[in-house]
Amino acid sequence: MSLSSALYSAMSGIRAASRGSEIVSSNIANANTPGYARRTLSISSESGGGAVGVRINGVVRHIDQQVINDRRLAEAEVGYRSETTSALTRIEDLIGTPNNAGSLAARVSDFEKSLITATSRPDATERLTSVAFAAKDLAKSINTVAQGIQDARTQADRSIDAQVSRLNDALKGVQTLNARIVASGRVGTELSALEDQRQQLIDEISAMVPVRAVPRDHGAVALYSTGGAILLEGGAVEVGFEPTNVVTPYASEADGTLSGLTLNGIAVNTSSANGRLHGGTLGAQFEIRDEIAPDAQRQIDALARDLIGRFEDSNVDPTIAAGEAGLFTDAGAPLDPADELGLANRISLNTLVDPDDGGQTWRIRDGLGASAPGDVGNGALLIALTDAFVAQRPQASGDFGVADLNIDGIVASVSSQLGSDRLRADQQLSFASAQAVELAQIERANGVDTDAEIQTLMILEQAYAANARVISTVDEMFDALMRI
Image 1 (tube, rainbow, N blue to C red):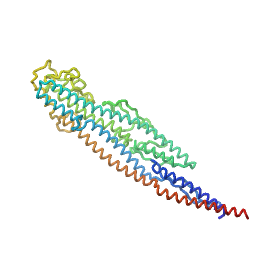
Image 2: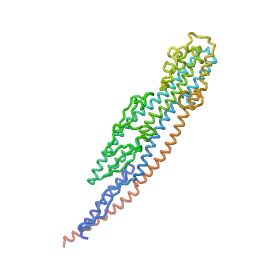
Image 3: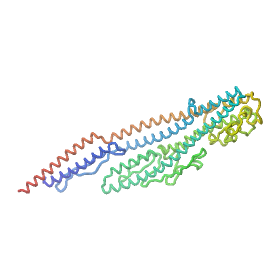
Image 4: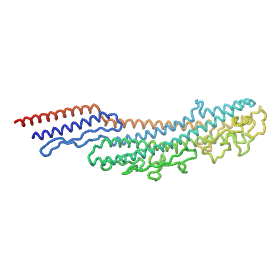
């Protein structure tokens, strides 16, 4: 080998060791950086024109795409389960537990106790007033639960709007990075940093809508939802959604009062059963808005219907005629079985007996339709009201099975159903979280090992020093030749 060849080989070795040290240093510095993938320098021997050296082929980015895909799907499942579990917990908290003084069950108990207390002393005005206020508190408690359910739907709609906006931005970001990666690859520019950015964007997309990344030519990727929707194939789709300021109990996607999703202007299914974008946090918000909360609303509406209906019976209060409101009303009107939706938001105490509205509490003892106070010692109507309240009767609506129930039983059934759903959701969330943690650990095992990187750096330093010594020796030999 000539001195020139030796010098060329040493110089190429210096360049390779220097570039390798730079990559190792980057690995160590980014060991805890989210989305960063370990890099190594790809080299091979080079010979040509009599010179032998080291060729730098490029930088290799080490990832296990299958593990990443599985981890993304697991994290999307965690996001979905977390959102739905949180919604069920919020609704369950609205109803409360019997030992909670502000719970729906406690309000039912308070009203029943007030009736029993008034029955023992029908002449006591303060006891009749207590019945009126206990009834009003019960109606307001039902209103509060219904309003909380409505708020959950409104919040879900707003979350959908925000996520759709971010989803569109992220899809366009991946499209842009695809173009830059393809262009950079053609001119031999380093791609790893761009691929890291793209991986983080795809992670963000997959948290909202679980996706699979499919490799395309020249380093680009396509994105498909697990439900089969094309999100990115060359160009990104435009996801469309129209937010609603306030979601009412009557609003639904079916009647057009709530927006669904569109992909490039074409409507797509958003249900939990067949939704093409279901499975992440975006699908969870649709399930909350269109399924979980409306199901709870129907149960609370059924409770309100039963409560109003119990006291509209002329067999209970002979002073009211058919078609007249009883102790509880639908916003002041009698019950209309055909207008049950949203009834829990509208149920109220009859103003005839509401002290805050100029009502007269003696009507609770003598009848809502009575023209004048009757015998103050007559507790017959109070007994009838109590019997009506605690009576077991079949349910005209709601999902309560075939058993006859009293008001206590209806509240207990609603609470039990929600508790069961929430417990099942908790279990599913725990399983999904464990799976996501395990896959994240597997992915990190393929990441940067700082101990191994330091060992590699020491080897590169030795190689650098050896090549530098060769250059120094060749330089001395050239000097010796020049002195001859």
